[in-house]
Image (cartoon, rainbow, N blue to C red; front, side, top):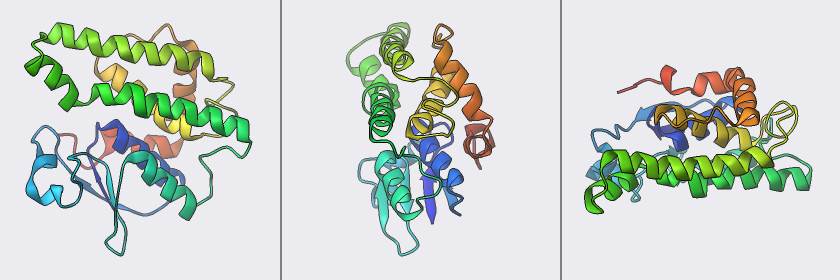
Length: 209
């Protein structure tokens, strides 16, 4: 199994966390986003959306989109689960994951911020404020939604934590102040101490270019 990934890609980070949580062996193929390798012909045959992650299965099948990949891994490797068994907690955990994956993180993508800056004519400071406003609005909602008792929802990591930790990393990387979200920060501290989350951290990936 091969994961096409980039260390600081938060979508790739999510998948790495789940692979490590479920102890699924995989190799990493680093796709350099700064060098635009995701737009080269060889990678477009793997993922026509020009994005990471992509997961190549042992039979050559390619899966794309982080939440779809995670859903596949949940089906094929159900232990430990990342979807809570209680239907209400599962729905709440998925809601947090979707706020991040569908509403916050896409606006951090370099293709989006470069378009806002270069095509729409916003300067870099304005682009940074634009991104930070959307990021903080999403975090404000999540702060109210999670119970923060240990992980986002209870004593075991869930899909909410899998998505939240990389987005907090993004916030720090983009110098967005989130110090006023105590539950999010407490949950992140707990989760990042988990061995699977630690192994998935961008700083310990094969390439940090």
